[in-house]
Length: 604
Image 1 (cartoon, rainbow, N blue to C red):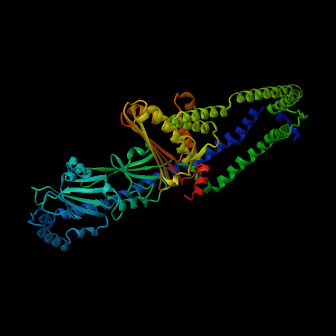
Image 2 (cartoon, one colour):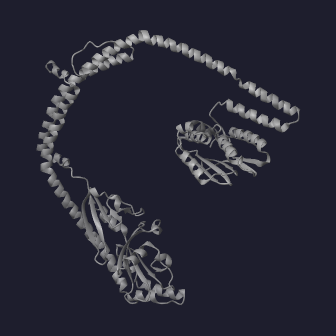
Image 3 (cartoon, rainbow, N blue to C red):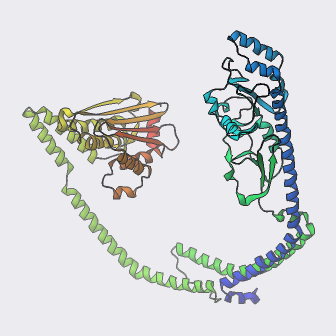
């Protein structure tokens, strides 16, 4: 290999060009020239023939099904017994049912269900003396508003092929399909004075199964002007809405033909889409060509790659070994300096770097480390001095002295408010754990509202309801208090009439509900939508840019606590108040560990 050290003097870019020329470009040109000239034209021709045969089979199957249904409609159109039944006026229901039973006994309708292509035969008539049944319906205004009737009426033809989605058939029926194709015509062969309409529903699944039986890799579609009626892409689509024809990529269409109805002025498109022909799949069948290409594409690139990889691999491995020593704080220089390419320059740069690091460690780093330790000690001393200047116990002792003085003077109301304020401040300053029980949180809320009631007087009333099973559940600290405080500041302060705040907490079906409502000033729709938008797009950066962050902060803490397994709703009406509903899914995966532990302790 020493004779090939000359490669060390070439740049990596030049080596990659060599690899590209001999391992990619030249083999690709030779391979494509052979493969695409000998195979692709045959593949395209075979694909075209297969598609044409598939379309002819689809046309034949469609003709068989629809002609059979049209034949049924012709028989019923010419049936005088049926015409007499639907045009006759009945004096009472008994008279009607006698004629109906006679009709059934003669199999005028049921006889045609022997056709496997007919799903439903329904006759609509404006004769109001008949009674609705499975085959006979009154022609009502509601019927005239239906999709199939409007298509029939607007078409203004003797016979119409109606395509629509029937919601009423979605949840029942033998084949459980709501996609409906109907042949509709007037029963006016004997009587033109009444409006009698025959609607024969084609069995959708019969045509669908014929389409699915076309075993082809390409996509086959049967479409009208607006919708994809049938497709071989998936089965059991009877309950799904029709896909629009826009979902077919025009660039993928390989063949497009038409199926025209014999008795109706309408045509359906039969479309086949497919990917471009890839002749590479046929290479395996040409063993001689494959063997020759394997020698040409593997042997020559292997020789070139071995030579190039040896030029790069040894020195890169050596450089990696010495870099590993640097991780272990062992700084050694590399004595191997052969090569003028990028790796050789990299080795020399590494040696220079090692020498500079040694210098930094011995001089600069030690000096800076000592300086940083002195600065850190100074900052710690300043912080301790600052912390000692404010003693929270002084504040609590002062409030306790004021409370005791108020009690001595008989000012029990003032003493109670000072006691609530002291308790609230103590729990706020001594934060402790971020999660507390709902019972402790509600003590915060009660202390806060007692202070606000001292401020507002009779203007403010409040009430609580906490289900017993909910008291031990842990939630983020001050989460309920934040919403109660927001209700006081933005709801109660801005009204002159008496108002109330109500908090309800309960469990239902493994879900925790927290509801906070007030009867304050409420919000306009624009302001409410702005708040909802902020909550939907809540981010940490918004806390720094917003003046009011209490509700936003609490919302984000609750979402992190629940791992986004929470639903939050806020509703408000001007001059009526605001309602906040928080729903936490207790059994959903991802709820915080603190909640799960408390949940297990309470046997929920």
